[in-house]
Every structure is written in structure tokens, then in C-alpha cells.
Length: 115
Image 1 (tube, rainbow, N blue to C red):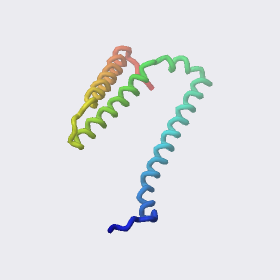
Image 2 (image 1 turned 60 degrees about the vertical axis):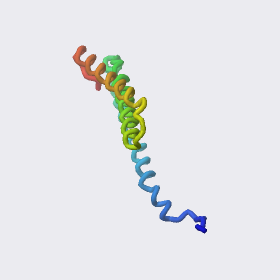
Image 3 (image 1 turned 90 degrees about the vertical axis):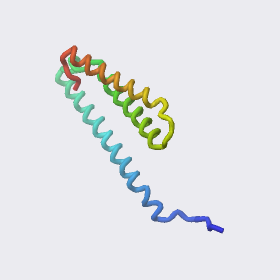
Image 4 (image 1 turned 30 degrees about the horizontal axis):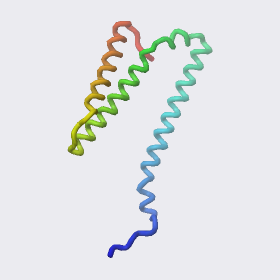
């Protein structure tokens, strides 16, 4: 008969330390990015340049395209590594690529860059 381990040892707890540290670093980085973006927008508003910068509506296409591409690639890689069927990941990859292609096409047609 195998005895049931009844205590949660220090070695088991130390296994999770790198994952918790990584999560803290990711949240700190995201917080720094949001803070710096906020400071930039406040500076633009104070100088009166905000109306010129805020009119580009293509930024969400870039963000959405990158997000869908990442989700699709993750799904495809996960399915290939597990030996299962690929499924909807390929569709998400192509939707993400189409959004990115549209973003860069519109950027080239307008001749401006998104900050």
C-alpha cells in the first residue's frame, strides 16, 4: 500500500516560486506600459496635440490581428504537439494574418504610421 502524503512540503512550494515571480513581472510590465501611455496622453492633451493623434482608428486592427494570430498559432502548435487534429487554430491564424495585412495595406495607402 502506498502512503498518502499529508503535508505540503517546502520543496513543493518552491516549485511555484518562478511562476509567481513571472506573473508579478508581467503585471509590473503591463502596469508600467499603461502608466507611460497615460503620461504620454496627458502630455499630448496639455500641449494641444491630442486631436491630431487620436483620430487613427486602425490601431485596434493591429492589436486584434496580433491577438488572433497568437491565439491561432498557440492552438495549432498545441494540437501538433499533442498529436491531435488541428481544428480551428488554422482559421484563427488566417484571420490574424488578414487583419495584419489589412492594417499594413491601409497604413501604406494613407502614408502615415501609428504611434
